[in-house]
Image 1: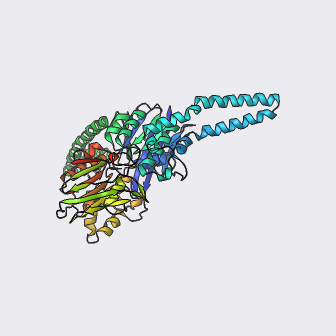
Image 2 (image 1 turned 60 degrees about the vertical axis):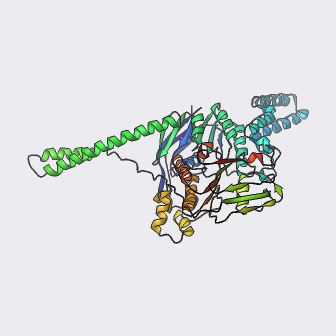
Image 3 (image 1 turned 30 degrees about the horizontal axis):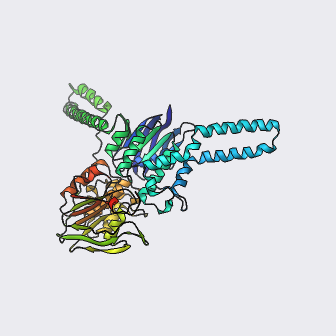
Amino acid sequence: MSILNVEKLSHGFGDRAIFEDVSFRLLKGEHIGLVGANGEGKSTFMNIITGKLQPDEGKIEWAKRVRVGYLDQHAVLEKGMTIRDVLKSAFQYLFDMEAEMNALFAKMGEASPEELEALLEETGTMQDLLTHNDFYLINAKVEEIARGLGLTDIGLDRDVHDLSGGQRTKVLLAKLLLEKPDILLLDEPTNFLDVQHIEWLIRYLQEYENAFILISHDIPFLNSVINLIYHMENRELTRYVGNYDDFLRIYEMKKQQLEAAFKRQQQEIAELKDFVARNKARVATRNMAMSRQKKLDKMEVIELAAEKPKPSFKFKEARTAGRVIFETKELVIGFSGDPLSKALNLKMERGQKIAIVGANGIGKTTLLRSILGEIAPVSGHVELGDYLHIGYFEQEIKTANANTCLDEIWNEFPHMTQYEVRAALAKCGLTTKHIESKVDVLSGGEKAKVRLCKLINRESNVLVLDEPTNHLDVDAKEELKRALKEYRGSILLISHEPEFYEDIVTNVWNGETWTTKVL
């Protein structure tokens, strides 16, 4: 049964077309991976089918009474609500039904025999619905999902306002899974999840009986949970059966076949044009020349898609730093007197490449910012080494930004010419259209590439990176990994992706050993 029909969808931003004449059909029980390079329109597609964006052209048709669940990382969580309150709100429709049923019970005392019979019938139906939807097991269900995503470790009675970005995402994801909609729409759900909770989500989605559409650049995760791939490229949407590895194999094969057919056709066109040019003036051969011209005119010319610029990262290196990069003395991190860690005595020396790992909310980002002097510690202090040139990559910058990408880099490096700015952005995998677009309209991955552009063009001998792979597509992630392995300076990075950092780092610091949070 078709849950969703999309017909002849077209959409763009200004003169930049995202989709042209895209059609799509979602069937019950399909587990779909929506893949494509940064900026191809994956999140835009999600926003269109959920009604957040109106397409320029096309028709979107949902089946009747379909419940859609969308993981929206920008949803508002009200101050004063506990995690338990938010999770229970997934069953609000059942609580409303219970309240309505209790109101009907209250009426029964004053009802006539006929009215009483009707009320009993109505309350009986409601009671069956409540039982069928496991209303009386809500607390157990909430506990089960919360445990799977590590929310019980944080404490279900914790105010949602006090949560970190990653913890907040977990709460929204847990609420969504409890709602058990007919279709789940998940946009990068693993961005803020740690390894054990990604494993739990994999098991959950493998057993999920309803349909879901998943956007992710985490290939092992994708391969584990999907059975269909929809690939977005050059304003088109192409369907492939199987997992991501199956898609890559077929995609490469189709690409090679198309290139071979293109070469053959170009040769044929050249030969036909040559024959026409040599023979159209001669009476004896004019008819033959005209027939070949007709063939040329009718020919459907194969067009190869324009090659997307592949990112190329090379970090500019400053003079060598002193032997010690930083040393912490009895450092306790936290906010407004609320400690997040034990007293820390950490030391980083020149040439070390360190990954900080551990669950969300234990203070990994707070530690980085305390070392950099952006946040005052609760107690203790940090001693920075000599001759440090630090490059800092923040996790995500939430502030509105009306600059174009061109202006954004130019403001940072005013000595550059326009040509040099454009070349620097192109090296990070951005096209001319992206370069001239405002930063606000870019996808998460494209914004990350703009921030990386600033980082690689500034001389450094220490890189401090907070979740640098979030939102990045496969090519950009691989290139970043290569550039970091090549970098001769020191690296301090936070990551939840072992397959990314394991080949780069010399040391791993597990934040769970020093956190004061109950885990």
